[in-house]
Image 1 (cartoon, rainbow, N blue to C red):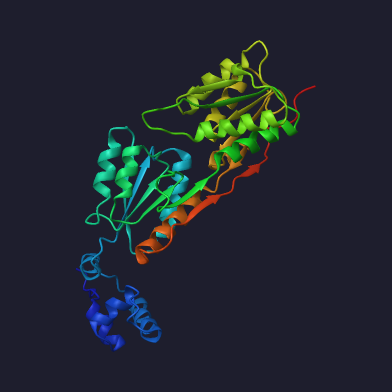
Image 2 (cartoon, one colour):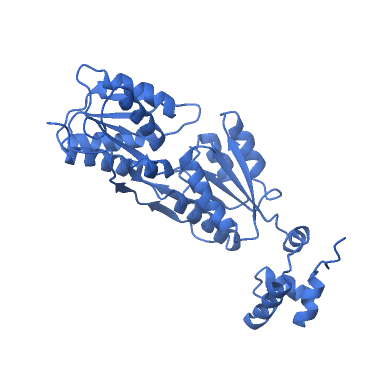
Length: 342
């Protein structure tokens, strides 16, 4: 039987020659503890490997020490990478993460209602979830700090946000193909989903249209394809595009996952990439690097890290002015794009 002694806050206080209350305030970053005493207490905490009792911490700080995260389709690669960045910052904080994964439209209202209460969490992150009018009403009246990551709404200017300009990113993707000499460029994206409201694919398509128009290249309706998001639907979409009487020489897929489906369709038809068909994706998730896919890089993990730090700051400083940060995109050229065959 182990006889290892459980270290208590009183043990830390005794060794640091302060009161247990001072130990608690030092650990929780209270301004009532001067720098010398805080350093002294934290050195003893590290020496004794003291781990604060989470229940006692919650009672002493009157906080839940939990952060809520509302996210749709948690397993999508881009969402997972944003979450990875968020968890990296939370791991260095005293906060636990409460995740609400939304797969169906009916779950939205209940998730928002349940998490937007101070009794459950000290703050909320809404990640990659398009906001409807009813969501705006709930978020606008919440009594906890909120940060939006990869989503925003013009009626919520007082809420912190970290976003990306997908129109600019889409224009960069099409612009790269145009610079290589392609004019028969198809766009493969997501179907308009009124039930969930996702718009990133269509913002990227808007950038594609802008780039083609600026280059004087006519938009061809047959070169636009949309379906539910996924690798297998994208493969079927690409097969249809590549069997057109005048098939495209390049395809811009609205995500790296969809670009993988395009690569599979090209292989199935015996087309060489990039000699016969150029393919560009969007996001720069891990699979893009593995497949040497040319893509548009989003700072996915960075958006999670920045968003969580904003929320932690807002919890400490409720009067912090709203921050609206738009992260840049970057063209990453690898081995799936080249000039069209002569």
